Image (cartoon, rainbow, N blue to C red; front, top):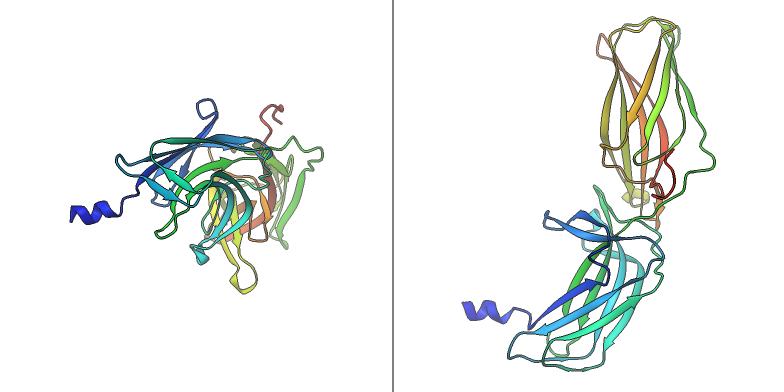
Length: 304
């Protein structure tokens, strides 16, 4: 039995290392098996370089039809699990056909790689970037090794960032105006606003502000929409009176937010909404929803 198990072990160890692995920022990502691992972070137009090391099992040699490394950007929709859509695909040939008797190291470099989309691991979709090393073989299966990395892209402070002003009301019963200082927020921003009660003829029990994420995947009849409430913030407990105003101050740092993603490679979108919820004494719920834009602030820029 041990012999059979050993027969399926790969005849070599492959390791992929990044040239600046010690100094580059790392983030935690979830693997297919549910465990987390630390991977380096890059942004679009950076150069990705490093080394591939192939070490045969002692006493074995590897006949091969060539060694290559690929940089792949892939989207996987979970209703179509196992099918990856490559939106970025670059390849470097590392070795011509031959034999490997002992450890060999191959440098690689992908210069100023265009990586327009961020890494994303959502409810129904995953966007990932990987390095894939393939040792081609003739009569037996290829030997393949993968190494994940993360892409995050940053934006400067928007030059135009209009405030949000909206009204919610029930005729002759309730009239509320709410105002938020802006419509675009970076991931560590603060939502600041005010809610004005102009007419209150129903008994309000409490009021909450929610942050919701809406992920839509696929298209046509295969469109899947998943809405997730990421945060609930109690604005008021008790009945308001006419003329009263309630301040809003909600810090975004504690929540796991991403930038807004619009129609990524025609496969998925991720949007964020502020949802104002009022509950009356009979537990009827009244709400008003407003989309906001999230972005990842360029770290060298001053926060706003």
